[in-house]
Every structure is written in C-alpha cells, then in structure tokens.
Image 1 (cartoon, protein in one colour):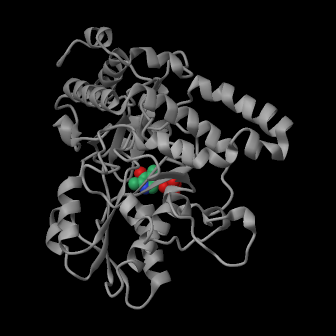
Image 2 (cartoon, helix red, strand yellow; image 1 turned 30 degrees about the vertical axis):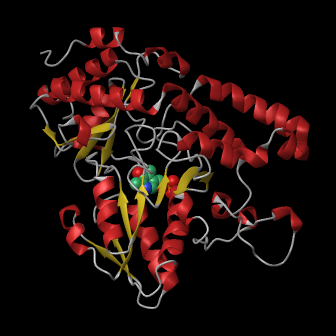
Length: 406
Ligand SMILES: *Cc1c(COP(=O)(O)O)cnc(C)c1O
C-alpha cells in the first residue's frame, strides 16, 4: 500500500535534506516527537562543552561581557523574530511559556482598564488556562476567564473583553487558527490578543506583523530544538512596548539594572519583559537550535512540514480516524489520530523503534520536524503504524501500562 507521492523522490528534491546530518541520530530509531521535545543538534553538543568549560570555567564572571552573555536574550530573540514575522527588538527570550503568558496577560489587562473578561478557548493546552485563571485572581476586581469554543470566539468578542488568548496551532489536533481574522475581530472591539505560538513558531508560516498581532508567547524546546525545558520567548509589537509594563518587574527588565537604584524604571524596549538573570547554559543550547532553523528559513521549513504531513496522512489512509486537518495549509507540524487504544498503539510503535506520543484520552500525535526527518523515514513510520493497527500488535498487556510522563 503506497498511496501518495514516492518518498525517495521527495527526498532527492528536498532542499532541507542536508540538515538531517546536523542532528544526533540513533540507529533504528525514528523520532516523531519533535513537537514535544526537539532532537539534539550536534553543534549544540559542542557549544555546551565550550560554554561550560571555557566560558563559565575560565572566563567566570567576566563572561557576562567578554562572551556577551548579557546580550543573549535579545540576540536570540532577534534571530527568532525572523522566523515568526516580527522585527528585531520585538522578541525576547525569557522564562517559560507559562510565565511569559502571565506577564503579557496581566500587562494587557492593565492596559485595558474597565474591561473584565479574559477570553480563551476550552480544551487547548492546559497551562495557558491555568495561568489565565491565576491572572484573573491576581488582578481581582471582577476580572474573570471566560472560555468559548473556537467557532464561537468571534461572537463572544464584546467591549468587556480586555484580552483574547489563543493558541495559533492546537496542541492535539494541529488545527491552525486564523491569526489575521481573529486579531482584526478582537481589535474591532478594542481588545488585545495574545497568540501562543508553541506549536507554530519555527514550523509553519507565522506572520505576526503581517497579521497586526499585539502580543505572543512561544516555546523553545519543541520545534526550535532548544533542549529540555529551554527558555521560551515572547513578542510585543513595537507600538505597544512603551505602554505595557510587566507585573514581574525584576531587575533584568530595569532601564539600568547595574545602576542598583531603589526605584523600578522599566527598560524602554522589549527588555522590560525580562525578569531575573538569564540562564546562560540553557540559552546557549537554545541559540544553536534557533540558528539552525533561521539558516534553513521559515518558508522552506513550513513547506516541508506540510509535505511530510500530507505523506503521512496519505499512507495511513482510512486505517485510523484523522483528527488533524487534511488540508496542509490548515495544519501545524504534527498529525493526530484518534483510537480507543491510542496509548497501547504508541507503546507498540515505540517498541518497534518509532517514537510518537499519546495525549489523553485517546489521541496519538506524530510530530514531523522538517530538519531532522526524511520523507522515506516518515513513510516507513506511517507504514509501521498501519501494520500495528492492522495486526492488533498493540493488544499486548505490556503496552497498556502507563508511565508517569505520557
Ligand atoms: C508546550 C506548550 C507550553 C509549554 O509551557 P511551559 O511553561 O514552557 O512548560 C505552553 N503552551 C502551549 C500551547 C504549549 O504547547
């Protein structure tokens, strides 16, 4: 069964094929989980040895200047800006996605005094909703989180909405939200919008400024290949930077952190959204991942992500229920299927050397990172999935025991 285009021909024409060799590989393993934790770029491994041994070990505190550690959050942010349709000076690397969402949501609500609603969608990545509950609690005064299904978001935009918070790509289904349209609709009622780019940054076309976006956050350890728990990023459109103030007003966001004065004075630009001392070792790892993606180019990455998804979907055919959009332009970087035995199917695949993941209660996801993966590898993994389902190879008690992290 070989529906869809011929994978070896696609590999032969793939301009990103040389990037496969830039990642650490394991014989007999196909990694379809780059949407959860991106694989290790070889240059990052070497860079980590240098940053620890030479920079930290030898330069010691002088490294803040001599290796420009202090400039890392802006430097990486500027490089990332090109991947998400932002300008240099609009993106900062800092903290976690959760913390960045908190900072921007509080700042956005405070910039819309008199409005009480934070609007979002149910069923998307839970930390976003947890943080927004915390934002409402912090702000008090009747401020509250309201959740509406995606189809009802536009109709729910009233003059009482201060900020709309949406994930650009849904973490389960990979459905892409219409950033330009929803941003326009929110602006029409005077609300700000925060986009979570965790599943879109560095994998599909993201055009923040082209869409008139206000604010965004995103993840460093998924498609940006920044390493486990890598620092996240945030975007604040230049026109908002003077007006929004971070509620986590730490010294690294101060206009003059090394003046050591008592009063907080926010930095004029994007740096005001920094909080504490940046994690230089983690930033060094993230920088390697971002640099690879920047070199490959956002549009080449997006085109290959679509083609890999189309190929995977064509080969699985109607063997499984697809819950991702079949149209590549409406889909993020992974494909998801539903099956009551999804957990056991994923375990059976892992036992056969294909790592995908499971999301409760019945969804399996296959992340198709364009830089480390070939079309042939992805096609073979899809064929194996079809075989595991067809032969019920998942029907083994060993595949049904759940680990802590799923
Ligand atoms: C992965 C992901 C996060 C991660 O948040 P952290 O605070 O960095 O752990 C947040 N939001 C979405 C939508 C995600 O997919």
